[in-house]
Each structure stands twice: as structure tokens, then as C-alpha cells.
Length: 239
Image (tube, rainbow, N blue to C red; front, side, top):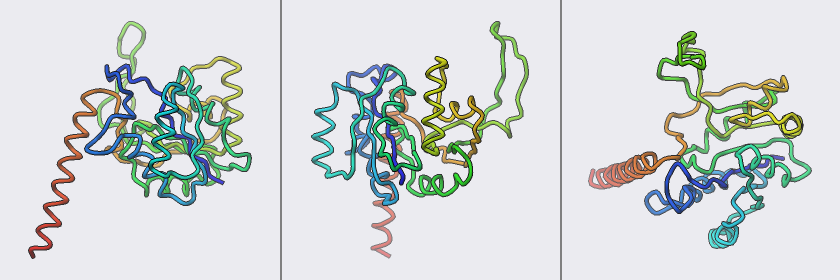
């Protein structure tokens, strides 16, 4: 039994906009809609826990009804992404075996990559879709002095989706919250408690939209792709 937790509870402070980023549009679709459309197309996922802000609930419920999305469960977000995910975990069906955690603000995730992540977890407790670091990374101390330069071939930038064995991630969350440990992504919780986590290579196009520049750039890229697709189809008809 596979459950997806899609976090859409951000307030978009970095966007400096009144409208949360997940409700902004790229071309004619909301970012949240683009993300949900991909996940909803996967029959293997039996339920979708959508974590949102309390003040957005009426709008989101009407949106879900209009789109006729299936098996959506609403959870209320916390003051951090980790607390939001944990609130989502508490809404999961008791028969759940696997959890897929994904940021609603990553609308360019490919269906094939989600399926690959599900199929690849194997005996591991967690799996992270990631991309290799392109830039040289410097590790510095508190005074900004360079301590060392890690080998870039061993450095990966974590994305979502991240896939977890349900019991492993739920137990890890309980332990870490009891100890009041702060982390920046869900998979770090499993690392802290000594569980096995692996990586599969993702796509650099699977960006998280967190700034105005991100949104403007992706809107322009989406327009270019749509124009290119239309041109290709037109050319094919003429040929």
C-alpha cells in the first residue's frame, strides 16, 4: 500500500508574494495542479495526503472537487516542513507500506522517475532522488575559512520525491522530535537513527520553485517548450 505525502503548506516568504507559490500559475496551470496531475496518474499510489495551511483549506477543497481528484486526504501543515510531513504521516492509512514524500513546488517531476523511485527502494529504509553537484563545494568553518574541498563525484543534491518504508520513517520522526533535532530533509532523519538510505539519479529540471526568478524562468521555459511542441507537430503535419 503506497501513500504519497505532498507538502503544500509554505507561505512563500522567499517569493515575496501574497499568493503562496503552490497556487501560482505556469502557463495555464497552478503549480500544485501540475504536481498533483503527475502523481494522480500513478495507479500504484492509493492515497494522497495533501498538507496545506489551515487558511487555504476551503480553496483547496473546492479545487480538488473541481478537478475530481481521487483519494485526497487533507492534513494541516506545521511551522516547519518536517512538522508538516509528520502531520501528513499521522493521516496515512494504517495499511501503508511505503511513503512517497514530495514538495508541491517541484511541478516538473516526471512520472517515470516516481515509478523508478518506488521500484528501486528494495531493502533500504529510504531513497532520495538526487542530482550530482555541478559546482565545486567548499567546506568552511565558522570564520568562513576553507577547511577542505570534498570530492565532487561523491556529492549529490537532494530533491524530492523521497521514498520511505512507513514504519522506519514514522519511528525516526518520533525519536528525532523527542530529541528536538533539526533537519533539512526527511531522509536525514533516517541517517540520524542509523537506517539505510540510497540515492537514485534525478533530473536537473526537477527544480523547486522558491523565488521569483525560479517562477519567471520556469514560466518562460514552459512557454518555449509549448511553442516548440506546437511547431514540431505543425511541421509533422505539413511533411
